[in-house]
Image (cartoon, rainbow, N blue to C red; front, side, top):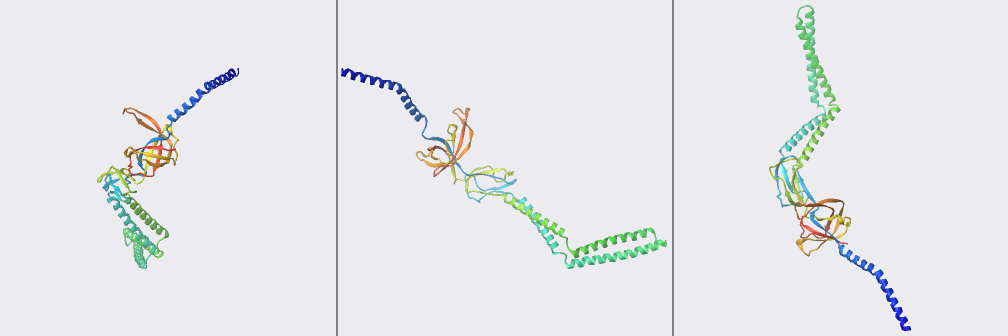
Length: 340
């Protein structure tokens, strides 16, 4: 009897275990399968294609319109900061500068003369002219009075009287002018005249400064230590202001620019560590970090195997700084791995 009862208990326990497995087994299997699928679908790290660029690219353009007399460096040349790159014909600007300097010298001499006032010799000359004009006026008055008496006594003609009257009028005007010049020479120049002379000097100085500033634009010097990658103009070519002449890059300061596809936008952050590899140096890993994450997402055309077929994708630009750039050159394509 006891044997039959024990067997019955064992059977009941087995039935309960089987039922439990039937109920919970599928969910356990599904959960384990889901975890496996997720591990297979989600890569451990995000990767993106990137390109090696220079941080400082400078387009050298003309600030003046004119003839290029010399373009010193050639494409591929290395230049130092301050080296002369381009020279323009300076003949016209030098002529304007020379004329401006002559105008300044004349204006300064005039101002100096006014500020010094009248010399005693000039005052004496003015007084002598006034005295001579007074003598001429006295004679003209005497002659007119004589002609008037003769005309009244019908001893001369009206024409002679008019002639004497005209001489008196001219002599009187000349006397008034010489007297005014004498009074002016005694007082010296008015303050307004000196201020006008100073304004002329200031204007001439400003004209010289303006021409000298323009003259500096006729010689273009390198703003950085760099490398000439493009050259658009050569000697004996005429250009307008703003015309590009060459492109200069700073090879000493490189960076990597990567583009995250839209599905990964927002997953990168400043300071995030990265590993960079290139097909040129297989097995070599360049380490660095994210230095800038652009907030805007831009649209980019992606070409398919068929040259005539393209499609657009959205990408986010990322700037990366590496600890070591040995062997990397501007324009090289790299693969960027964003680490957790």
